[in-house]
Length: 150
Figure (cartoon, one colour):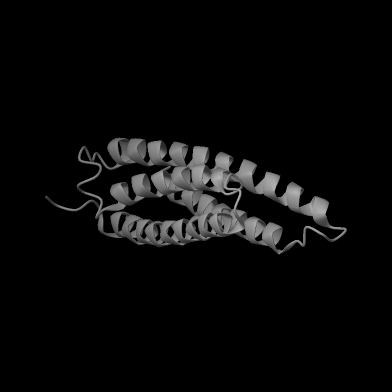
């Protein structure tokens, strides 16, 4: 049961990468080509999956907290996990920020402003990956070494 959280979160991590690929695929569609309707469909999937995965990461964060408290009897969930708890919470915050930034990409009228927001959306995603990678490493430390000693 204690491995449910890590497996669940690894699947969600892979899903986040899939969402990124959907977004890049949608951007590659030429809006003046016959496949222009594909762009809207891909972006809709990108947005829906992003929201769903973010909600599931929230569930995963809660599951991780419950797992630490119940199975490992760790009461200091953020202090004794080598930063894993902080990384999970930051990752969730970055995904939520990505949702809002992604939705605002089409709002600016000027093309340059849209490009800047899109670029920021990508950088935010890449920063999310760095935080998620740290989360995976620190989570493995918790599983292998056990909770940190205060």
